[in-house]
Image (cartoon, helix red, strand yellow):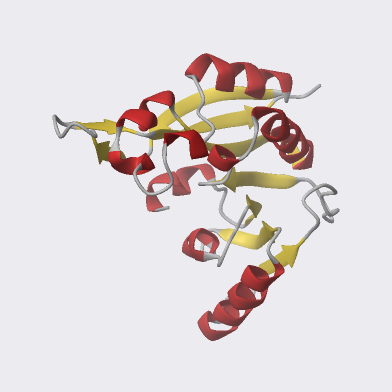
Length: 184
């Protein structure tokens, strides 16, 4: 998460969508004045809260929700991010989530969103679950999705490389799309 820190304003409010056990959010907690983790799995939320207590992460709050209705926050957020969530969801659902996340941002707020690229199907990334278990995204699809959610793309950061299935090298399997909330 250190490579993404420059997009989290010091002392700002940050939300991680699909926070799981909280590892990514704990990594950026020192930058945020307030950090929220939003997760559909209440068991993960309980564990993340315990970890947060052990770490003394008093500025981090985890919340479970029903996967449909986003909670209300006291003010618009400075940044939202999601890593490793959208590759397991249908494109239509992702479009709704991205729009909802955008609506939580203040104008100029940052969104850092991870999307699995189509080239991941050619790598060992898909070995465990099979290539058909994932939802892939072309760059033009992501750009269109962001635009429709009032997010202006500012950077695309390759996430990580995996070996090709045929052993002849490696490819980046995903990108983190950094965008800024535009006023509507």
